[in-house]
Length: 378
Image 1 (tube, rainbow, N blue to C red):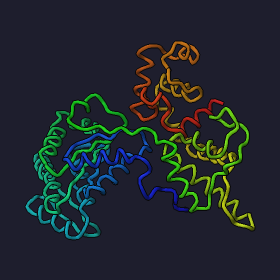
Image 2 (cartoon, rainbow, N blue to C red):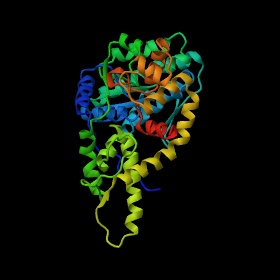
Image 3 (spheres, rainbow, N blue to C red):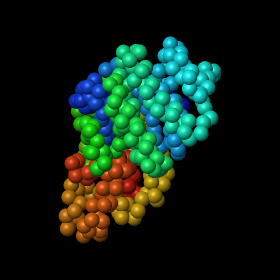
Image 4 (cartoon, rainbow, N blue to C red):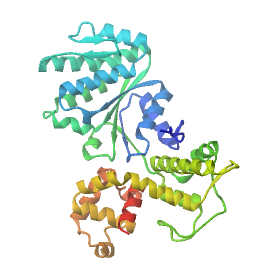
């Protein structure tokens, strides 16, 4: 398999958000980073942590089915964040009084076999270690929590959640970072800063993309425009078509340009005079079709899991984008449910990261999904 040379080695856009997050981490603040899949939430945390010299402990709460499993995620996160030999040795020293086995081979690993009371005591102890390590190393620590609300599926009394929040607020070198699609009402009750990630501007995306393409022998043909393609109502250049197809989504841009590049390698092998490959509109369109063909099984499964009302809203927005899905004309035209049912479908799609809310004009958040729906509906 050919590696993807289009994975960014630097931050693409988001410089304002990077500065905002860096300042929050430096001030011992807690924050929520909200954005759809592919908007760069995890990348921002990584770059902000690097900028302020912070270690990152990442916990995906979806992987935890009970307290013991959550504790194993904490231990795993600690070992990943503090992985130098001297840091591993320090963690080992700190844990030697605890009822755990600290294994070093084949890689560092902490294991235990404890009753519920022992699990709770170990949780309290492990949660103090980030502060202690930060003091020893004179650095900061960001604890990044994905799918945080999943903890409530087993933490029915909210004891773990409450202790986690209280402990992190007490620690002077540890920040609590939530990753979510949209800010939920309960999140606004927390004393945390909210950083929302809109779609990237085309200029920000192209500033990274152009030199990266040049390095791989690619260039959009500046002069060529052909027939009308989906999402365009006029003859368009290859660059304009690319912009319209990926709509500021970095993940989709990476996937599409990589496919165009692989296509160009095939065509270059057939040519006796290698040179810069000029991308034409039909290259963009045909490779987009190939990309969504690969993604089709995933999208089919997604559609099957959604309620019919939400599917209907998605399909309507795909074939007929609008900033006013609540208008009487739009509802009648697409036979949508009225009132609260429509708003409930839009809110649910926004929480799933499939549709942007009113702030960004109720557009579908995943351009490849929109393209696939439009092709599927003919």
